[in-house]
Picture 1 (tube, rainbow, N blue to C red):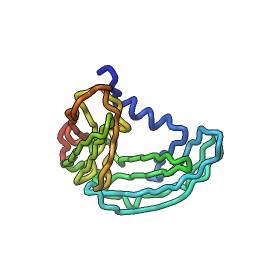
Picture 2: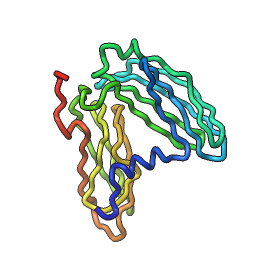
Picture 3: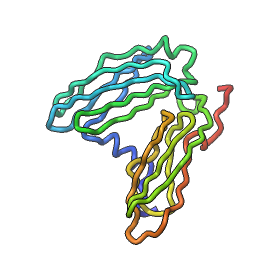
Length: 203
């Protein structure tokens, strides 16, 4: 595994970002989008929040903006989702995308219940690979939301992202630089959380 990042390394690159958007969940199913700005410049963040079912259908949508001064944290007003989630806690998830003024973005997914109690659909993730010079392009697409999608290759390389959530029925592009002198395309395998164990409908 020399030269290959593990799951924690990919995730750490996100939660140690200079500007990070997150969701805080409080008692009463209040979801509060907030931003931590570790830079020396003020930032502005556009926030989109959705409640989706396990088919990816949007059940609720909210937008907002967060102005955050340098070296500080700021939040939007909490959004109470208690009525929207009631009776559907095992079948829906909350997603937020934060687009920051420095050009970076944060992506957060929160489950109302632990993952083992969620009724995840069996996702069919397609994977297409192409090569341009020494750069490998991996294009992923899932028919239903797929969580913690892992890309595994038979070559030592660091990808632009990994262990990601595919929440929309669209293409997600991942890149990586192949080792010097590598010929052809590497073998690429993809799996997600729903492949790790069976989810019981009785939970």
